Amino acid sequence: MKNTPVDYNITKEVIDSYGLPDFGKATIREVVAIASQLEQATQTEFIHMEMGVPGLKPAQVGVDAEIQALRNGIASVYPNINGSPELKAEASRFIKAFLNVDVDAECCVPVTGSMQGTYASFLTCGQCAAGKDTILFIDPGFPVQKQQIVVMGYKYESFDVYEYRGESVASKVEEYLSKGNIAAIIYSNPNNPAWFCLTENELQAIAAIAGKYDTIIIEDLAYFAMDFRKELGKPFEAPYQSTVAHYTDNYILQISGSKAFSYAGQRIGITAISNKLYHRVYPGLTERYGGGTFGTVYIHRVLYALSSGTNHSAQFALAAMFKAASDGTFDFVSEVQEYGRRAKKLKKIFTDHGFKIVYDHDLDEPIADGFYFTISYPGMSGSELMKELIYYGVSAISLGTTGSNQEGLRACTSFIKEHQYELLNERLYIFNENHPL
Ligand SMILES: Cc1ncc(COP(=O)(O)O)c(C=O)c1O
Image 1 (cartoon, rainbow, N blue to C red):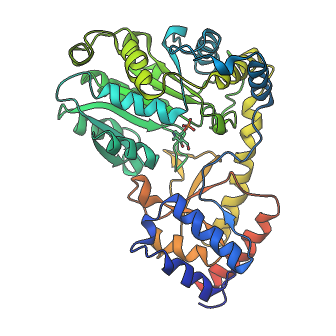
Image 2 (spheres, rainbow, N blue to C red; image 1 turned 135 degrees about the vertical axis):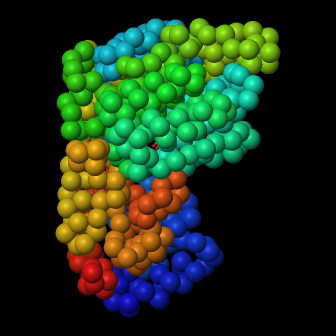
Image 3 (cartoon, rainbow, N blue to C red; image 1 turned 30 degrees about the vertical axis):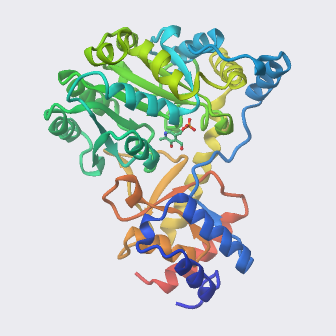
């Protein structure tokens, strides 16, 4: 096909110059680089759907508190390794307000983003008991977390939950846990990349199996309260964000400031360790560190070794954002609902032109519109589709890199600009003509 919106020959030349044997394995950074190079070379605008970066302004209440803290001189002082008392208290209150779960302030630990939270969690979980050295990923998932496992020389197992929703999820998880080597389970809810949400029943069943094999559950709430099918933004009022913490006391929650508060640049989040797990003593930790509980090892050994605490001023920002949200003076959910509005429009444009939504249901309920969605085109592999769409000025990443077995792409709504819906419509019209169904 030569009548592509982005000049065919230049696009082919640029893609070939990257020498990628399988385009579907290209990293997000490579896709960004190719798209940016083509934008320059052809002066054609791209519709960027590859990066999962917040596209909204940071929450003002956080910015103001952080500036004030800096003016007060906190930049010169090492932060308390446990976290600032204000932030710990507000995190505990926020968790009560929006999850209806009790986690003591002591057990809420600031981290430099959930990236650090999961790294430190994997590391600590894998040192608790001899032989429990593997992390189980309920996929699809966030590829960098597997990179973390590789960096620390750990092992992981994974399965694509696409075919195991509902009652079968627990027996699938048990297949792995029964081998006895799984230290922890990780999944994100809502899910990156597919935006499905494990249901309360599924979480309850996973909690029960994890309890049977004494496995820690790491719940990644990077997209906290962003299942827009439910009204999750009212503090201390049901409905609450779904969480496994309603069904077990052996969990670690990762709550990120990045997406819910558009605060990714300051690298701030909270690891909330259940009260019981925080105070638990493990033989593996005692042997390695000479003492300590899960929580104190996590903070005073692992986080201390990684970064000696968390960015001081950002802790003031997160404390202020949590406080305003719990007080009901800052409706953070309404702010991020913009992603849902975008997804709704984009999904309609894709499906109008023959695309399918890959992960489209939570059992019998259509998934929410939110930060990401997944698309496929009949007869094309994910890798082929990703490459082909570049010729139409649309960039997204292949599901193959996320541990999914499905053929398709992840599209992110965060960078979409108002005028791009019409542009996408025009381009997909041509795409559909060039690839008749
Ligand atoms: C599922 C998931 N977990 C964690 C993160 C990273 O969060 P943070 O910016 O807090 O490190 C992301 C960011 O894209 C994510 O999608």
